[in-house]
Length: 576
Figure 1 (cartoon, rainbow, N blue to C red):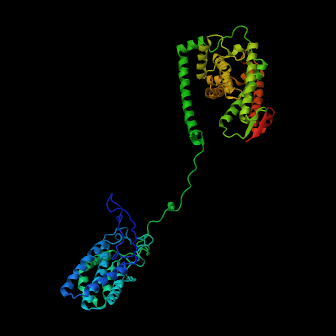
Figure 2 (figure 1 turned 90 degrees about the vertical axis):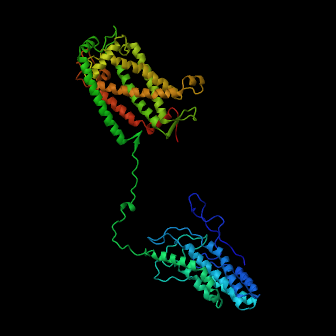
């Protein structure tokens, strides 16, 4: 009958850096190793029958007692390698009970050796029986087979209820096998089935048991001693029933964190690189720093102007110089209207420009009538339309300045403009405002600022804007190489920031140096060479208030719902 060996699963190495245990070619021991239920694995019946028939054939010749007794040690010697193989140490793991030793116990290999000795003793019994009485070979074979099968597979003893708590079962020892240890096994009596195996196999043979008893006893003396020592070691392990509550009062309980997981706080909303709270802190700290620096500057400049050098400098350069002969006096009405249109367009241009920079996915597009494939966002179309109107208004403004002679107000005509500009700046910082009359002329600092705005910043804004717009020829390779679009983008936005700063400072100074008088000059075209003539006239203020309402209304109305019908007059409007 064919036999099938089961491969042993390999685990961790026994020594650091060694091979996995057991070795690669190891196979389960044919006899003596305990199976899952604590009994020994039986050898194949065919091998036992063949061994028994050989023994019967050998006993047919007359053999004396000395020869018979000499065969017993040989039989024992043949059983010794099997016993040594079965006694291979087993890897020990976690304890099966709380506070116990690692499982399996330390002497598990010795118990397996005792189980392996039982088939050897049983194998010697048919030989002794054959020498004592000559029987037919078939009868001897039958007797040997009957003796071998029960001796090699004794039934495991069922553990009693008082032997201890049941052991927790883990992974199987062989692939596809049952969980280890087998069910019903207890910790305190784990070695008892192996120790009782020789006693259970002796009565199974009958008469030959007496003749083979000395040999079996000699073979299993050391094994029994090892088993008893292992049993004592197991008995010393306290058997605790893990199902019963602990004997002491519980003092520790699972806290709130054991069952509650707070939801993660959402990330704060960021505006640019900082959150709202960080921006508030930056504004407070930065504002405090600027206020402190401004106060220090005021005190320093006041001290400087109080010195002899400062007094002489202000007397020589009061902050303004006289205009050339024939320069016009006062502001014509067209200049006031040009000023209003310029403010109106500049505010909307800044709004639409910032919207173009922040708009990621436009929802409405505009395309020219002759080229529907070329599309731009409605916001960009609005920005470029305002730019075109602003350029037309600016060109008309410069032409009127030249025709009427008003250009002498904003174009420097003397080198004295520079020291007078420094004097005016020192007076502004010291909070002692210059006393010029804007109806006649501006101070030198104002003149330089207006000149830079009209003749430097405005042309830069126009040139860079045209380069980034659709008006610029895309196929002009030479122009594109000489004037790349990256340069235009790098200049256009800083120019817009300059306009914002200029408007802010201009409005602050208008209200800080006589609001009613200055508003009458520019919005109502009313003034006099006497600076105090229109100090209490509110006409210019109300015109200014109405103009602000118009600008605010245009700011609110600058949205696709209002802009789309206007854009359809000049092209096609479509959605995404």
